[in-house]
Image (tube, rainbow, N blue to C red; front, side):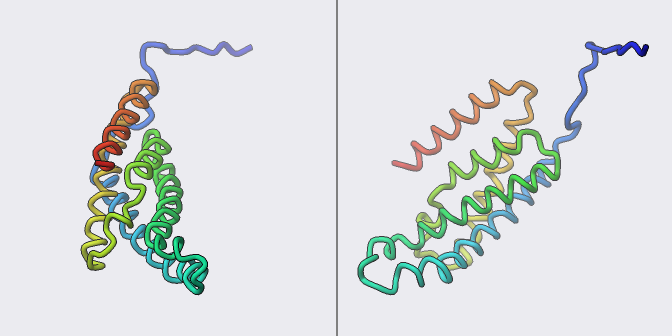
Length: 161
């Protein structure tokens, strides 16, 4: 019979190095994809479906924000898959917190030129991914979840003002 010996003094490390520039590049790429999906969903799905008749005038007036929110869900899913593939710690926390903070980004950037929208999307997604992946590096889950939740609540309060 084999005896299993566990070494409690040296816990296994999940991820030895933290590559913030890799996470920033992922966030920047997600920002570009967000802009592209927001445009495509709005132009090819939301506008043709809701803006052809005057019955759906309210939905048509919010088509930019609606398409941005749909794109936000899609890029959060895509970002989660990429973060899992790259073995980033707590990728669900990073993806969900970024999606919550940047919910409504298309409405915030409505009326800007497309270059400015891309710039803001890249900047905000990149910074959000770096911030939340940096916060998620800590070994214990409860303090990470408390810190991320506090950050998200404070950011949404600031954005609501």
